[in-house]
Length: 407
Ligand code: FAD
Ligand code: UDP
Image 1 (tube, helix red, strand yellow):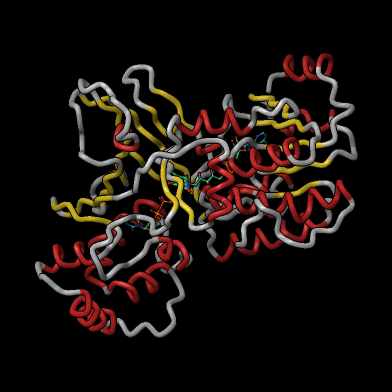
Image 2 (cartoon, protein in one colour):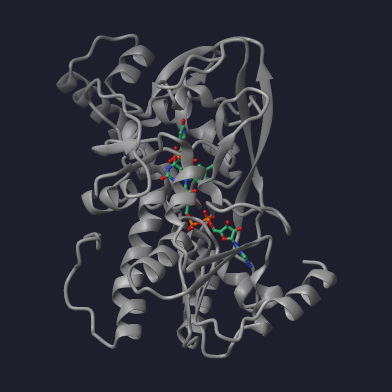
């Protein structure tokens, strides 16, 4: 923030009566702010350094094509938790979009995640589910991995080396630029492996895209008159103006909060290159992955497919090519890499965090966790119910309320 703006804030914005500040208007911060205003009935200041609410889940309509796009890459809402689904449906209805992904390798297109159709196409077979299981068990046994310790071992022990080489190795090399033996196994267990023809990317029963977009969902979520939203404001620029005793929920990067004293956590960022193709349909699906290392991007997003219920124009279509790289100073952090040295740095911040009496840390950046949207909402609801609300009401948390998910 410029010096002029800082002075403007000092003179014209009265922070002296503020009791609750939420830093970051992504799903975590927005959920906490909504609960403080809507459930506790207290005034809350919600800050974001960006010019919009919604964090990385934000969407808006592209003026050239009229197509709603997800500004930070495709975002599909999915959960198996009924209470999180009910909570988010308070702010939007969802369409019936089910996410299916395709992947291209060596000039051939296959369905992703790996399931019976992928296996049969790849091996040019017509395996039944049990035949595929038997076949793959032999492939997996070749590597004799007893206890998978990292991404590569985990993947090979789930699908065998040939499928790993074709669909995972190249994509992962581009996505992480890190030896897959140094990456956590949990990254790959995000993807299911199925021995039937269920090709859904996510197996969750509740799934969809907000009918009028994530931007509208967030506007409704944050429409309570007790929520004061200040955009384009970096918390660290106004922190000194806040009262000492106000309660802060911080969803920015945890290392930045502590001035990187224990070191910088490593992140991957992405570059999204926008293009308009003069065809009604560029790739026939919302997300096409590119598994080969030689193709510089990881995937192409075509946003019209997220809203089959809308009547978009047919002359052109909006696509984003996604390129992945290490985040440097000033880049948006997207994916926590979480190598061993990151875990040590994080542990040091976890200790420092305990000493902060009036600050709660949460969300993807504040917890350094690869959270999906439903997990960010779930974690925020839990923090609100178990920590923030009891602190204000003086009543200890005893049992889940109607909105508290069982996580
Ligand atoms: P964020 O959305 O990152 O919000 C944090 C906010 O804090 C940001 O707006 C930031 O500007 C603000 N902030 C940070 N520091 C400061 C500061 N100092 N002062 C003021 N403001 C600050 N999840 C799914 O469920 N489905 C998907 O399909 C999916 N696809 C994804 C695709 C990509 C490419 C990525 C990167 C993520 C995807 N996710 C998906 C995950 C999803 O984006 C996160 O779950 C969600 O954004 C987490 O919300 P959050 O509030 O924790 O963080
Ligand atoms: N992955 C892969 N090939 C694919 C899709 C995913 O190798 O076609 C690996 C890759 O390492 C990726 C991880 O699986 O980081 C998790 O995939 P997911 O689709 O969950 O990643 P995201 O959508 O969060 O970028």
